[in-house]
Length: 381
Image 1 (spheres, rainbow, N blue to C red):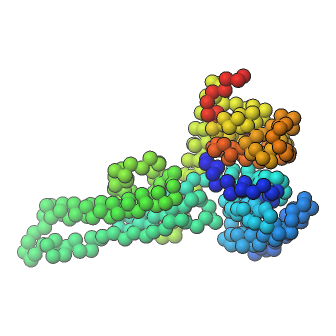
Image 2 (image 1 turned 135 degrees about the vertical axis):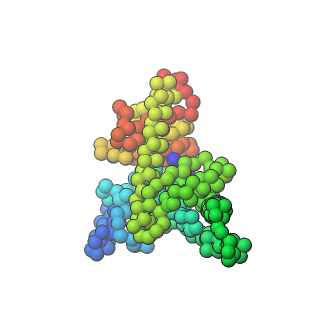
C-alpha cells in the first residue's frame, strides 16, 4: 500500500501525540465508556509531557470525530502544538487503547487497518434498475464516496404502437421472437448506462475491485459493456442484489467476505515475491538488515506484523527521517537522536523514501517478524 497519506503527520518538528482508541458502540452505555477512555488517555499524555493545547484539540477531536454508528470501530488521532494532524476511523478497534508522546507519530495501527481494506465499487442490479456505490474502504462506519441509482427502460410499451398485433392478426413464433429480441436490446442498453456509471465510480474512488450482485443475465450484459472500457481491476460476482432488505444484506455480507479474500490474496502475492527475492539477495529480514536498507532508501516494500508484544526500540534522527539504527553510535553526526518503537521509526523512514507497505500476516510469517523487498539487489553482504 502507498504510505503517502501519512505525510501530513510528519510536517512539523515538535513532539506528536498519537492516540489509538476503541470507540465501538454496541450498548447504550458505550458513550460513557468512550468518555472515560478519552479522559484516561489524555491523562496519560499529560504525564508524558503533552502540552495543554494539544490535549484540548485531541479531546475535542475524539468527541467530534468518533463515529455515532453502532458496531465495532476505533479512532487513530495525531496532534502536535495544539494542531490536529490527522483523525482516522479504524474499521477494527485497536486491541488496546494507546497514548504516546514522542518526537514522531506512531501510526502502525492505522496503517495495518488501512492495509486490510480495498477501495471498491459495489453494484446491485436487475434488468431495469441498478445501484452503484463506491467506497474508499469497507465497514459499517464508512459512508460511500459515490452513490447513484440508475433506472433504465422497461418493457411496458413493448406492445405499444407498432408492437401490438392488430385484430385478426396472429402472433406466431416470429412475433414472440421479435419481442424477446427487443427485450434483450433494452436490457443491453440499460446495462451500458450502468457500465458507464461503474467506470466513473471506479475512477472516483480509485477502486481495486468491482463487486456485482443481482440478475444473472443483467450481470452478463454488464460485463460485456465493461469490457471495452479496459478496466484492469477484478470484477467479482457475489450473492445478493436488489429485491428487498434480505437481498441487500446478503450483498453487503458477500462483499465483505470477497474483499477479505482479495486482501489475503494480495498479501500472499507480496509474501511469495518476498520469499523468492530473499533467496536472490533482493530482500532482507531481521531488524539490523532492514534498518540498514531503510537508511539507504533502498526499501521498495516494508513488511511488518501487527503484533507488537516485545517490540524492539530503535534509534532515529530528528533531522534525517530516513535514518534508522539499532545502536545510537551508528547515528553519530546525524544531529539530535532519540529512541522509539521500531515500527514507528521504520514507517517514518519508509514514508520519507516513498516505500510501500504490506502487513506481514500471522499465517504468512517468515522466520522473522518483519522483512523488506529491495529496490535493487543487495550486494553488500
